Length: 149
Image (cartoon, rainbow, N blue to C red; front, side, top):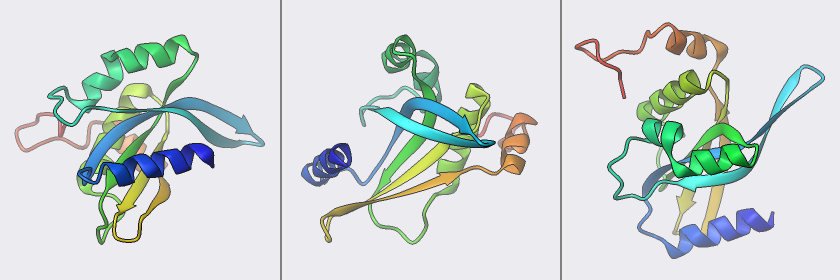
């Protein structure tokens, strides 16, 4: 709860964050055939960074530090101002590409930064097994056969 309050305060102080994507690191715990994800760290890529998020996930110092701490990439956080939809197609494509790279299912955390109401709303999502299989089979490609990301 304390960490969430600090994160919410950070977003309120940085009102210029209308859309930002970051990586979530932690552990997966399987208990009674159910998998739970425990988020322990978050990396928000600088907004002016030209490096693609997929490359960041593979090669960044954040990923190397997380690995050294025994953490792995477990999710994606999408911070956005209020909108009429929870996740955009680009959010889903990014999540699919990252899950394909990691080889496992992970969480997508939608963080609605409602400045007018002064609070943060977090909603967790997960790609379906069918969507994961489609990404593994490279069914999401651009018009010229290039990767969608």
